[in-house]
Image (cartoon, rainbow, N blue to C red; front, side, top):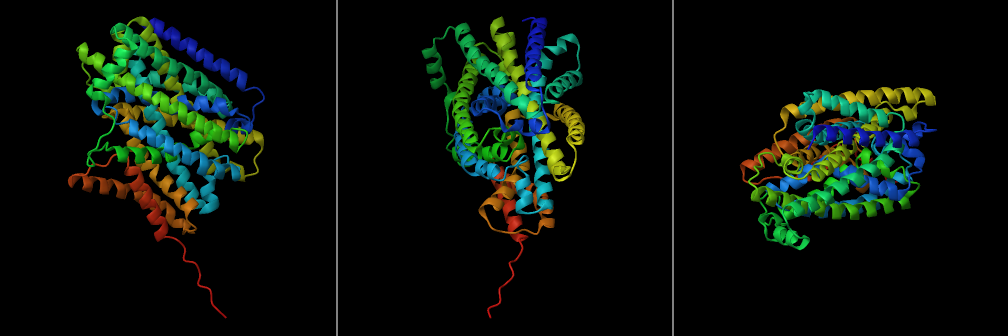
Length: 484
């Protein structure tokens, strides 16, 4: 497959994104950037969120990880669905009732300024690490299979992608992303389906044979029943539930799209529709992973890096159609991994950290501040991606959730205590609580490992529970009433 052909696809696809940007940025203002003027059709948001949720991690790392962990990811997907129900029925009504732009302003109303800044800071860290890790995976594949042939260094390819994403999100923000996400979702889903068809055709499998081969293979094992295993199915389910509550319901990026819907009812319809589509697509990704593994075994293809199994087969072992389809899917994943995150981080920093909503700034001054923050966010993305380039040591799907377990845990604890208790916390102590919780979690995980118990993604639950415990310890004592 010609590298120039891939470059041509890259140019055409990018041009389509900028065409959408041109159509969606006419007569925009700051509210357009932050909330899409609360005018986004729910079905467009639901469809687009599929691509934003899948990203490059699901596109490559989930299928590749089947090589080592079979279908143990599926119980976690079932947990995702349960988590989306919680988000739709508990969190969305709260956000719409308070008419929030940044969801972290809830913490300010509930606990105080120090708690609010701490929660927002954890989101900024969590989303920066998670989004850049996803983007790193996709850029790494594009560099290895395409741009390396032109002698372009990794850092230059990274800078190019970030500049392009900056270009089409700079003005329109969430109003643009709602629509670019639909394009990215479409191409990503087509890429998965066409890839499955191409592999089956090349291997001379009928659809029935393909399903039979997957079912009879060791890769199709769904439930790990050993309670001490990292992927024990109950741990996977609970982790999926709480990962969804935190990485969707407590994440400004995902909720910013929901809050751009016209009303709560539309946002809930969006969430339920989105979760159903996502369940089906994850099944497709796991099936794709199994047939990739079977194809690799039959053809003697080594799998030293599971994240690269899909591109190795699609680009170097299959006909041109498969390679082109894969590259279009990768490009969709690359853009969807970062555009919404950059917008959400800009929103959170300007509103939560700089407090522009509380200051009597003109529309023009807010816009200038937003532009500067957006540029700084792009620089942070570049630095984090280069850090991952130097440090990568595990399948990216595992790295994403490991990071989430430590960085989203304090957010889970803050929101849980705020919604389900009536405690009033000593606000000045909360930054110490949310800093100590991940550290204590890490220490407990290492001790348990020495004792023979391996934590999985349920580290998130431990982290959140320690945060709730810390809030309880530093709660304000209610004054005792004196009977007369």
